[in-house]
Image 1: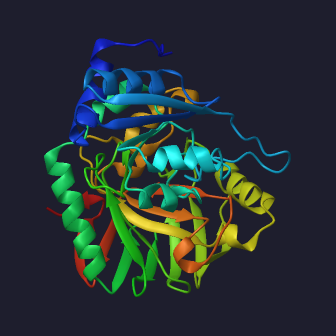
Image 2: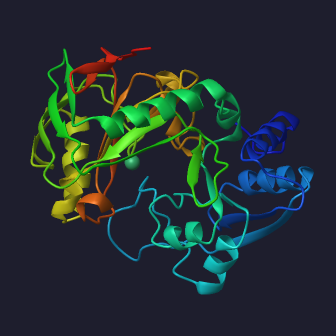
Length: 345
Ligand code: FE
C-alpha cells in the first residue's frame, strides 16, 4: 500500500527526533541496520543525522535466521550483533546509535556494553515512516511517562480488573520498572520511537489471577485483533491454561507450545500505554508488513501484558506475546491509573 521513498515530511520528522535526542554538530552517529531492515529507515536516519551536522557512519550486518524452530516475532532482542567486538566497540564509542534492526536491541545481550561506553541508543521501531511521523515524541507524553514510572517504582502492587473478567494481582516487590517516551538525551540510556509506555518486569513468582482477552484486544505477535475471547489462567507467573473456542485461542495454544519451553508461558512485562496520539484501531489500516505494532503497545489507557523473556526473573526464551487490552482498570496500591481503559489524568 505505502511506498518507501524519502518524503520531505519524513526526513523532517527524523531530524526532529534526533534533535530531541540532543544531537549536536560533530557528534558521532552510528546507524545500525541489518540486511532485512526496512531500507527507508536507516536512509532517513543517515540523512537526518547529516543535516544536523553529525559525523554519521553506517553499520550493516547480515540478518540472522534460525535454522529451525518457529518463526521469531517481536522479542525486542535482535541477534544481529553476535557479540562481534569491533562492532560493539564502534557502537559503544558513538554519541548516538540509531538502531534500525528489525527487532531492536532492547534485550540484546550486547546492549549493556554499548550503554556502558556512554552511547545513547534510539530504536526506530520497524514501522512505516508514515506511522512514525504521526507519533512524534512530545513534551506532554514525556512528562506523563516519567510521572507514571515514578508511581510504578513507588508501588507495591498492581491490580488489573475488567468487565470481561480479568482479575490479576501483580506484586511489584523486586520489579524493575521503566518507561519510554521516544527520545533520550542521557548517555548510557536507550529509548524507542514511538514511545509512550510505562512498564514493569516483575520478579519471579509475582503474578497470579485471570487475564481475559476480549474481542478487539490484540495479539501483536500475530498482528491480529481477537474476534473471540481467550482466557489465560496465571499461577505464579506461568500461564497454566489457555481457554477459549476458535482460531484466536487455537493460535495462542499452538504457537506458545511450539517453543517447547516452559519459560515461554511466564510473564515478561506488564504495563500500560500513555500516548494519546497512538491509536488502538491502527492495525486495521496497515498491511502487516508495514506494521510492527509499537503504536498498539503505546495507545493511552491500554493494559499491556506480555509473556516470554524476563531478565529480572532470570528467565530467557524467544517466545514472546505482547497483548494490549482495552477497557481494563489498572490500580497501583489501590489508586486507579487507568479506569475502564481511560487514563486517569
Ligand atoms: Fe514485549
